[in-house]
Image (cartoon, rainbow, N blue to C red; front, side):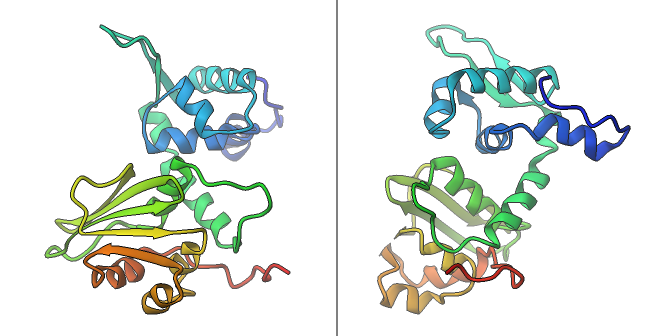
Length: 224
């Protein structure tokens, strides 16, 4: 491990040594969404030097958080995935995402969205993932070229990458969908002002907007 050592026999110190390196949390975020090939990790983490990615993956393997699946048959690309120990970090990753999102307003110059970042944001917005048993609503959420899906069915919310096969509603939006998730922009206003465009059963958008929430922090000043 190339991390600095804090010299303390402390769980938090040890955790910081493991996940505190630059890019490590984003690698874990992407793998929490689903297994990835090396090339997919590179594509989903624009700006990461390939030698840094290789080093971080090796460190995470050594710590037992990530495992490689060797190719079989016609498949030649190694796949990286979280181990059960790595999967234990999901609540922590969600909590950190929620904390960070609480201070976000608009993208800073040069900031982009990725498939994993959108999917992760929706997973955080789903919260405990519990909905009424009689709900059966399927959404595709499209932000730029990125698509994710949200399924509210059988009392639970499922979020994943890519479009839903048979969506009841397709929601197309830009970064301002953040205001909807924060509860700062209600569903009718979001539609009327063009923040979102809807295809399908538009009446389901209000359900989406009221259920999927990542509130702003009241203690973070508005950006100038």
